[in-house]
Length: 426
Image 1 (cartoon, rainbow, N blue to C red):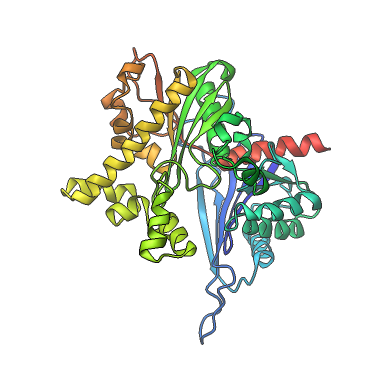
Image 2 (image 1 turned 135 degrees about the vertical axis):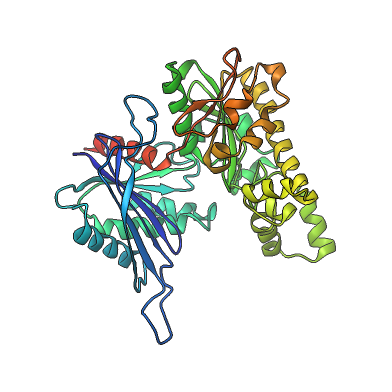
């Protein structure tokens, strides 16, 4: 049995999934959180916690992506435990203890690989990579490009290697899929020597999701990936869009960091850099103040006071002017990127929406595509409003461009890539 453990590590938490890759089903899913938040008071131990959900072994109610890649099994039997977890190493020990006590048994179903999400691979990593000491050094060195993410990802790698010392560990980089961007797309028009010395260029993110969705769309339509021109909107709290030609990313909205591009939950997306000069000179704001403003106090939150699109839509229904403006700005940016990518691709065959907003907010999808009829994009209003599981078509039958909703599955994509990389390294 080909079992893969997928780990997504943050600075004070990590999520994981244990997958059976023969059936591509989830055996267990868990979250270790508030790592290091130990109780200093009287009471009940640490504030850290571990929640694990084991597979109920009943048939999935979700529609498969295609016949060869069924959807994950429904999960049930959830266990939660509050206890002191001082660091990531202790977190993995707690996870192993839970598996030993409650299953699934890692003795009977031992992982053959551990896949790790790593946010930034710079220009060095363009494919899933078996983690060696040198790779760890490189991930650490690339922390200068992702100071909030790569150190946390590396902490998870180090701890997981202690827990699973005898299996290959594989890094799957968010930036890797976008390493096919042409120089014209990834180059900023600033002093070339300065840019080179500080590795300033556009890298792009959400690559694992964009890869999964574009390949799933091709499989669903029964068309060769290499023949399709696709635009994929990954719209969650973080949001990005990618232009994908024949399975290769040729343009994407995020840049040096995930701040560039679309309006997001708390991030501004594109903004005139001179705004920062003005706020520093006239507003007395520091670099840290500006960083916090654009990453944590902007986007939907800055415009409407809420960061969740569901709350924005509810505000619009109540006639809230700020919520209406936030929605209009959000959709305006989506249309701008859609039009730009239509031009870059010289037309498009498939447009897909994924992630929390993309999969669930019909009004966002309708707004984003409302002006693209000239390009052969014709949305079916009833299909768009109808909720469903799995991939579904929301364009009209006679639309030259097929519009899809494609649920993303980054954990499954990481597991697929990790299994392949581990096998090729043997």
